[in-house]
Structures are given as C-alpha cells and as structure tokens.
Length: 162
Image (tube, rainbow, N blue to C red; front, side, top):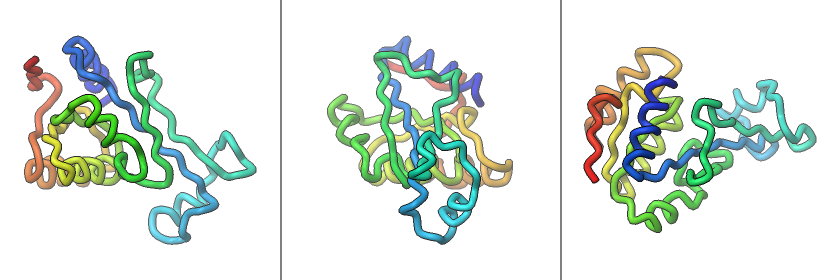
C-alpha cells in the first residue's frame, strides 16, 4: 500500500494535481465513552500534550508533505469533511474529481468517500493504495461499497487526463 501510494502521489504531482493529506487528531477528554471512542479512550497513546490527552495520528514518513501540498486536520471525526475546511479547499481549487488513497478502508476512508460522493464529487478509489484491518473488510469496501458510488482502479490502471 505504501509503495503504491507513493507512486500515486508521484503521478498526481507530475500531472499538476494538488496533493491533500488529512491528519486525525483525537482529544480524548471530550469523546463519549461508547463504541470506537470508548476503545480509543482506554488506549495508551504517546501524546504530544499529555495534560490534555490529545493524540495526533501522523503522516507516514514516505508521504511527507511537500511545501505545495495541503494538510487538513480533522478533530474527533472519521470524516475528513466534517468540521474541516476540506470542501472549501476543493471548491477553491475548482476540483470535481477526487483520487482517494488511505488507511482504515472500512472506517475513515469509507466515511470520507461517502461524504465526498454526497457533496457531488466524482470519486476514484485507488484500491491498492488503501488498507484495512483485515482482508474481509478491505474486500467488502473495495468490491461492494466503492463501485456503487464511484470508480475503482489500481494505481497502475490510473490514467490521468489533463
């Protein structure tokens, strides 16, 4: 997944397509004690602000943002559009199509994908640039969910038309 995503980022940059990274921050003290958040609240995170019990999921070193890249931070949400300026950024870029990569295919990724679809974006999932906690969840999302709302291809199948 990492090598394929590096290839996708290189293809996008070569075509002049903006690269947008999302980072998830968790403020544990304000989360409800239920579901996924209950599990997160009881995990031991290496926090940058232990007094606030705040944790930031970083960007994989191989994807280190370049100066021209955009970084969007989401707080206590799985959806990269919820309470962020991602939609405004995309509208400002006059973007109508998203090439999506990422982890937690059946969680953050799928929720953001559905949210993009609901906002009218054309969505292309790069299936070999996503990962989930197990093969069953990955397969269900890639073969069952994503084709209903967008296109699915591999990074090698991706053809970028300028």
